[in-house]
Length: 188
Ligand SMILES: Nc1nc2c(c(=O)[nH]1)N[C@H]1C(S)=C(S)[C@@H](COP(=O)(O)O)O[C@H]1N2
Ligand SMILES: [Mo]
Image (cartoon, rainbow, N blue to C red):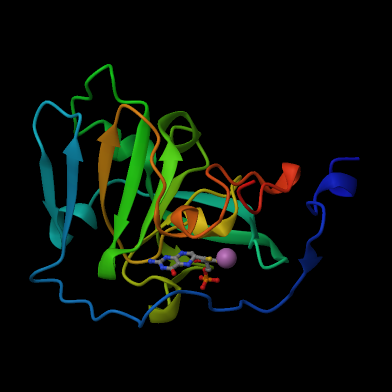
C-alpha cells in the first residue's frame, strides 16, 4: 500500500545516480574546511573538519527525488544527524527558518521544523563509502522528504532566521518549499 504511493507524481525511477549541480566540484582541504552556524544563535559556532567528522554518526535509508523528474529508491546515507548539531548550539526562540550554506555561494532555504525531522542528516557516506566528490564530498545535507535541490552538497554552514527567504534555486523560479508529493516544483 505504502509502496503504491512511493513514487511522487510526475517522477520516473532511475537505477543510476545522476550528478546535478551548479558550478564546479569544489576542492576539499581538511586544514581550512569549517562548518559555521550563524544568525539567531546565542553564540555562533565554528567546527573544524576534525571536530565535525568526529560527531556521533547515524544512518538513514531514504528515497531521493529531483525536480527534473528522476527518483532513486533506498539510498543509504551515513553521517551526522541534524539534531546532533542542534545539541551544540543555543537557539533563539525566534528562529523558524534556515538558510543552508554551501561552497561557491549555493544556498537553499528549509523551515527549521523540516530539518528537525529524524531523517535529516549531514551525510559523509553513501552506501558505506565516502561520498564521491561530485555528490558532495566531504559532506552534504540530506532532507529526503523535499526535492533534492534542498539536499545541499558541499555544505559549509547554517544561518538561522526569523522569516523564510529564497535560496539559490528558489530565487530562480523553484518553489519556496518543494514537496515532491504535492509536485511543488516551481513558484506560481
Ligand atoms: N552545493 C550544491 N548542492 C546541490 C546542488 C547544487 O547545485 N549545489 N544541486 C541540487 C540538486 S538540483 C540536486 S537534484 C541534487 C543532486 O544530487 P546528486 O548530484 O548527488 O545526485 O543536489 C542538490 N544539491
Ligand atoms: Mo535537482
